[in-house]
Length: 521
Image 1 (cartoon, rainbow, N blue to C red):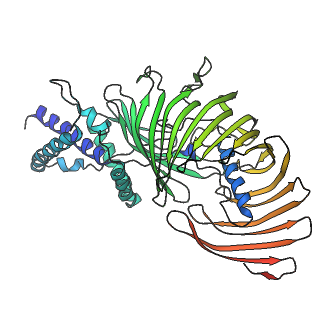
Image 2 (tube, rainbow, N blue to C red):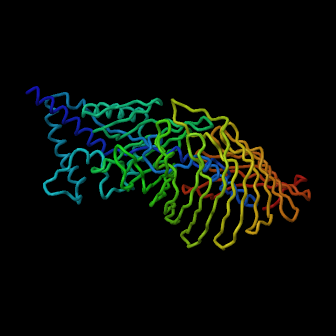
Image 3 (cartoon, rainbow, N blue to C red):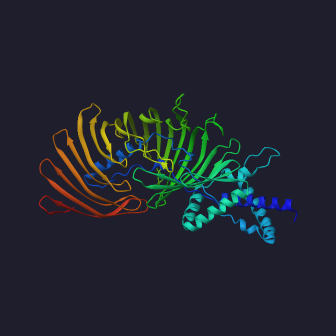
């Protein structure tokens, strides 16, 4: 065979291989920034329902201790793509290569017809290879993509590593490149565009590592801006979540080599139990100014949201419409931290609530150490207090003032004071939370909580221990509750079970009074 033709055939085969592989590939990854709200106490029924509600509020509170970041998208600290299942060895034999060319040309034709079906084309124009590796189909089927990911997750680590090596060979054979990051993650490029990242490592304050893969990174053909990806995130307990981002929009002045300001995106997430929810965020505006640019090489533009419109859809299909606005920030170190915002929500039943946070304060985290080998999930500054005004669905107003918030060496909240009052500022409840303890995964195990009421009564809750399942739902706990009249009650709840929707369906419970007698429930 003519040597020149032989070289062309090899390159053509490599391109075909990566095209087919990338088309079939679905990505794993996760947003370690949304590392889950710091674990608190899920609703535990009985009198603890009040505590549970506050635990959930606390989760949101600690989440906002992070420098506010637009959870949008293609920051490489969060997204990592993956590669294909190519077999370059199949082109070694001349006869097999001839057959492969014919077969793959036929597959490529079918693939291109499917990819470019119903896509507007200029007269006489032809789609190029960029479309096949980097543009979402106009009729992308997220459900099919998630199903594909589930099948991918069944493969062994050896099979997945084998596919990475095949992808590496295919990318290089097609003129692409592979780069290795400090944490060992591999980045794959085609035509100068990042198409996949595999194996990024993110470490939190508890020393737990989350591994994130991002595959199938998609681009707009005209602007060459990223418009979608699939991410798979695997935490240190083996829980896997999948996030598919699509329909990403940018400001008019965004460009491939300039600033890239995301103004909207759609995100579909599947949790470790297979439950699917989604977020659609639009009309995002950001903090701007001469200081909000590059700091120590990092572009800060498009990171700190001032306002947006959002529609959240839970696993049951219930939609909540959110308006977030009037956010304010304070600069501390190299980041900006959120101090104020207004948020309005309307749930699926038409209930309207509003929340106004004011005056959040922060303190330097003494346990923060800047890392160079791994991606950092912990914060340099942690929130120490704030005031929040809220109106519930019945129109009742109340105020919460949080203060004296302190953390352990893993950035877990171990103490705080909370003042609850009505709209007129009249004292209702003064809460003192102390001795919070956590396991190595950052899940809350025990605490002391005292609630002092305006009428002079007091409730003291000592959580002795808490058990969790792999995914982080509470499976059991023991606690002692007492009041200032000498009444003491011990509650032991165990065997808590959940369905796949993470709804509590059964448990066993015993209650014992101060004399050691059993109390019927």
